[in-house]
Image (tube, rainbow, N blue to C red; front, top):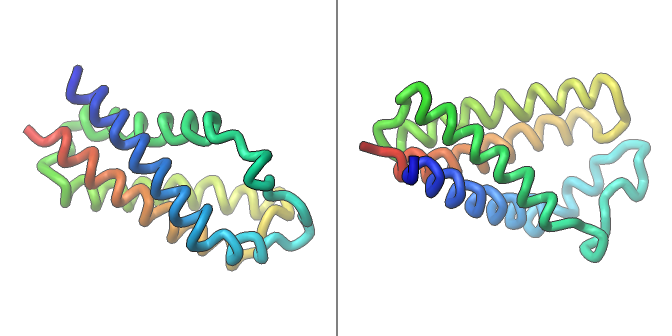
Length: 135
């Protein structure tokens, strides 16, 4: 149980930092230009609630840890990377395509880009969690 808690916590930190790096620094201007009719939808840096962003990452990393440990899928970082990629792409596509179908949050380029970035972030996080859960 201690190993799972450590893996979930470290995974949360990794996922938070990857999100900050990919969405908040490297691709921030790119994604802000993909909103079709929702001008001003992104909060300013001063308005962002980092605690709530971290809480979301705790749930994401916690889910990966739960899946990996419950189904004994891990044999190390590589299996974590692969599983994280599949889960990340699937979760992101699930959410993004429904949002695309029901809102004007972003265009199709934004949807596909987010699926790729989320897949990358969860693959890296999955590799870390897989390494920590390895027997």
